[in-house]
Length: 238
Ligand SMILES: NC(=O)c1ccc[n+]([C@@H]2O[C@H](COP(=O)([O-])OP(=O)(O)OC[C@H]3O[C@@H](n4cnc5c(N)ncnc54)[C@H](OP(=O)(O)O)[C@@H]3O)[C@@H](O)[C@H]2O)c1
Image (cartoon, rainbow, N blue to C red; front, side, top):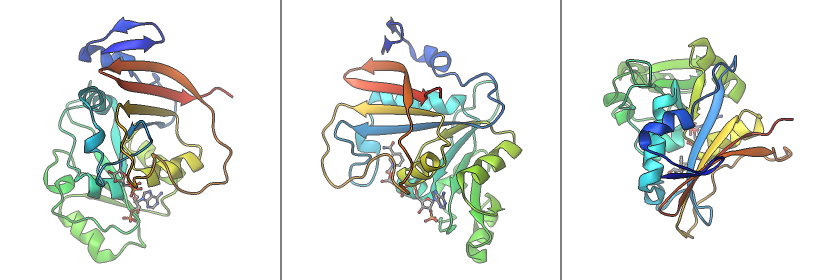
């Protein structure tokens, strides 16, 4: 893998934690979003992102997880991608980051790998409006179920902050990403462009409420391997 910007260099996987380091102490949760897309903007192939991944994307995906305090994900993605717990410990800690899944419905099967195949309890961020029996079933499966007053980004991030989980890695999906953008809560976007044309009916990396002026983002770095571009953007200074 090579870095094209800011300063060209050959990179080894061991270099990635430094390349993608979070700000030392932003004083609040820092939201990094990570997506992979085809060149023509597809976010999935046959309903899943796996068909878009390349070896370089997988290496960076893993490195980003190892830097995070928590992996935040929408329920649609957890279901479609059959999520399970993260495997490798966060750098500097002895445990992997917990997965925190956002769901208004709490409609997650208790036998998902999220609950059965994880070394740290999965956090379920929901509200008391979700059916009580579903919340109870997820608790019985070992989940840390949190009933929040609402699932607005400020409330979600407030709960993560309360737990000391400030280095947030959001792995999507497009619905949750759209809510974060609408709330002005995205600090960073790591976007892998895979050298593929996918067509089909797949959506793009964010959808949801419009009406907000597009937010300017500044290019932080560009890595490349075998035609895959790994772009990192951060919120532009205002
Ligand atoms: N290419 C990539 O990098 C990538 C990454 C992630 C996902 N994907 C793809 O994206 C697709 C899934 O898209 P999606 O939009 O359904 O994903 P999503 O954002 O993960 O899921 C949406 C669901 O999450 C819950 N949710 C998220 N934000 C919420 C909020 N603020 N308030 C209340 N509920 C919230 C709701 O679940 P309930 O229905 O349970 O209430 C909602 O229906 C899949 O095909 C997946 O493969 C691709």
